[in-house]
Length: 172
Image (cartoon, rainbow, N blue to C red; front, side):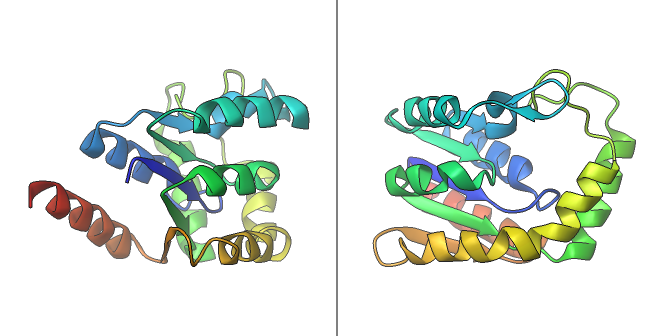
């Protein structure tokens, strides 16, 4: 695996997994939120989103984390592996709350001027994800299930096992 797309809702652990895999595999990690948003969580134009993501996925190796439906197919089509973190709502809400309370530093995985506070926006995104985005992500995954390595992980221990499996393959 040299090209990995990681998707899932906020608080699922995309950034954490991407960072772990990047360190383990020695592959550059791109956090889409850091590239596709302007201060105040204003998203850039769709054409600019596609240009940025096209440049990322044209590289020989990469890990890209972020849900961003408009660029999923582009990322999935260039990926060797796709990881969907389909984590339960309560786990995600706990992580969003913990992250907003424990992190008093600027986060490298979000654009400058975009806070990580547990806001109404974050709560709304977490609650509406299953209704507005999950089904579309699953349909996008279905398009690649036969041609890509697709992993759907639901719990932290599954994520840990996934990382351990990759580490084991490297040491074999």
